[in-house]
Amino acid sequence: MIILKDVTKVYKNGSEALKNISLAIPKGQFAFVIGPSGSGKSTLVKMIMREELPTHGEVFVNGYDMFGIRRHQIPAFRRSIGVVFQDFKLLPNKTAYENVEFALQITGINRRDIKKLVPHLLKIVGLSQCTNAYPDELSGGEQQRVALARAIANGPDLLIADEPTGNLDPKTSIGIIELLGKINKMGTTVLVATHDSSIVNRMRKRVIVLDEGRLVDDQMRGHYI
Image 1 (cartoon, one colour):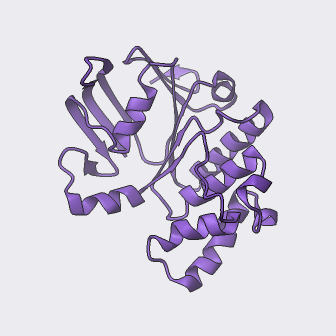
Image 2 (cartoon, rainbow, N blue to C red; image 1 turned 135 degrees about the vertical axis):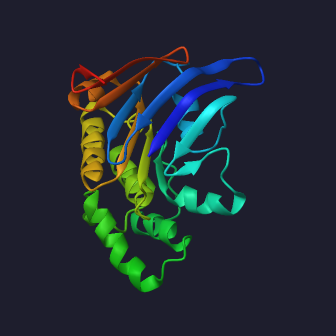
């Protein structure tokens, strides 16, 4: 699913964001990437999304070589990944239903299927009662749930959550992480980048630790892997 081989990333200003990282995240796994600010989490996420390419090394995601991928393959690669961010990125002039609907429309799904899929997706994230609510009428946790429904609308193989609880209170954060666990149990590989140790400690999942661009720890359920 995700393979990094001896990956180093050096930015133009000379900053070395990742230093000789090698790891593999198999299909269906739930993994956290943690570390302090400047540890390389964001660069790692961008590399998996192909927003950045390594200076040295190889990156493979969902069977695609990030260096060798052809231009015409990139749309299909993007559709194989769902992404949620800290700031939700909802369209403010569209309801919860319309935000999810829009994600399906741009992939060319027919209207009849969309009418079936949107309520189903909102039900998965626990928002059946908020179909007609606009983002400013929803709490932060509810907005993040809409963002999650939108992210899984195309049935992605991989869901990346970049600081998904950064703007949420602790109780709401737990709900979002538990929802990510539910999505993982449905067969989607889930990668969560976070600095929130409380949610990591609550979930018995794989934890990949970065510090100053280096992979310094990698554990599963309390045992080294």
